[in-house]
Length: 580
Image (cartoon, rainbow, N blue to C red; front, side, top):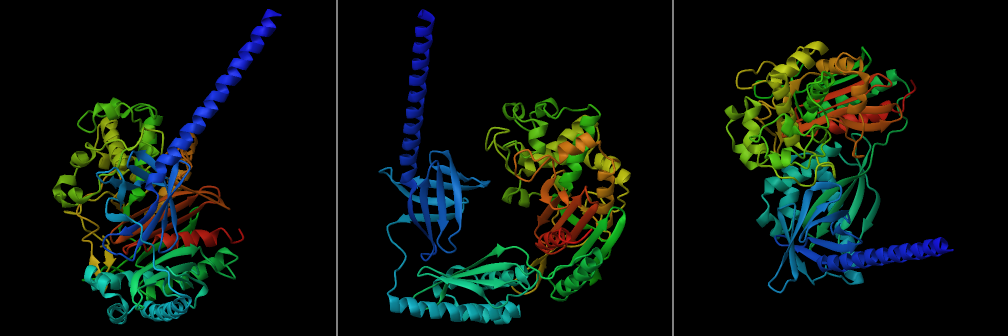
């Protein structure tokens, strides 16, 4: 009887305690919700009064709504006055209070300052709405003609006659021309609009891109006098093509025609390879490696890989782990001294964290890095000043954030345990076993043989990036390769020449559901998992898709901005739909 009463009393006590916990949690959630409401409101861009943001509290998040395209971005609080985008921890919002403790402004991305205001966007009368609608329709027609001309002179005339004088005073004309030309470079031209929308705050029309059939929403904000205050665009639907190629042969014919079209429009300069296992189905080359000397690209032209050679770094680490030289779950303080990172950080961060971009470390790229002398980066140690001052954005393992600094540290770990330079290690253990004869992290101060110069589109023509930067590159990126060598790497990787199947499984596991494993990006397709990496820098762009289950490999290397990414995505999209 006593035991029964005691059990009953214990149960009641537990229920009361549990109920109290629920109440406390609800009260805490309510308090947080009230605390977040102080950030709510309309914010106006300080240097363009026609631009507005709206911020609302939603649970434990802030939702930022862009007035010009209605795009919504969720943010989570990282400190009392700072928030980070939920999907991108490198995108911060930093709020400021006045002397009374009232929120008065926010800085987005550490750059654009928005002031909190009670003003609302102008609310025109019905007659004004109709007049504005007509103004938008005329402006969209004029804009589409200018975009499709891709003529700097035509676009400049549009800008000078149709952009509001307040914008022309703030933004150089050539920059505005480049913004319009960028829409052409994304689409290859835009066709008659499909569904359009209009509101008192903005006008938007959806256009079909001529290159890959995807839709782009183009949005404008006009002043009361009908002049452009804002211009922007975004992709709203991915590739559309009917009928699609049904067989590998039809796919190759379609791609050749598409590549010829892109080359004729000067929207692609580079090399493309499509293979199934050892069999090469398509190899394509166009454009110039050096515009000044009119040297054409060829199959042996070496293109900057950007971040693509993070794959080589990850494979190298896994090789050393297989041999017992390091442990993936060990802190990097086991391998690196405090000149690379303070022990307070390196004792928390493991090799696994660096490989999976869950270390919480940031990025060494920035103004000070760009201004450093080229000679500083002939060895990995040259990156030390730009990595050693990193602080943790979050506790290691608790979140995901792409980190070039982490990849440089992996290179330093490779040097520490292998007793050789990173560059020598990957040459001996990745490039040579794979049969990659034209791949290396070249020192461009002394080696320029058949190297593609990167080119950045301008308002009128291109500017050279001077061999994709002056640095040698590192374990984070900046190596050079060819489409044939990258094919050989895919064959060696999936064929067991570089790693065991157990290590490959670790490489290709999505640790934080961010489409990323160990140094490899991951995609799910109808043909099974696709693995690889993309890379880019001013004037260069590349990517590789490896499909282990079906044996396909796609490699696209370009010496134009953004020229490889969408083309590679398009090839993969087509490949998923053919009959095998």
